[in-house]
Image (cartoon, rainbow, N blue to C red; front, top):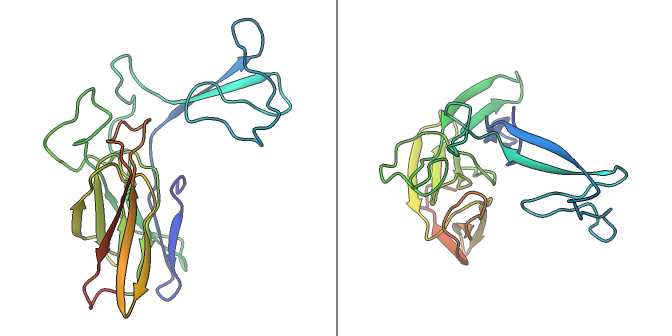
Length: 208
């Protein structure tokens, strides 16, 4: 189950890095008619909104899509819900798989948990990898950007973001110096802190 956030492929090591989620969702078809003003989409070009009833083409139904939660607002599946993992592209075997993300800043609890224990959180966003065998990922439902050893999944570093980092980082080089940049804007559905930040980190010279 490797989906949602996309993957980062290292063609030299023939490894794909992905962040699979294990969080069930419930879809409900809502008939158009009395009590449901959702009309057949005309100019939406196949898109909906972040929440609520979504339009659909060619059928007399809208659809809702929500996590499978208990009456207390907690997921009905036990954690972990989010992982970071490496897949060997030659053998199709999972090389390593680690929980990623804490409930420090958001769901699944009604209030954030101040202790940042590694639960394995839902994610929105994907990883990037560098030629120096380091991968970077934010994505989780907390305010962190993290770096991992691509060979074994060891966490090398994490940096606190001013808002939720539910996005995929990017990297670039200027005058021989490599940088990693993340958009920290938060996400309403995740309950992370909203913001309007672009945060850049300079990589050590031996990490490229």
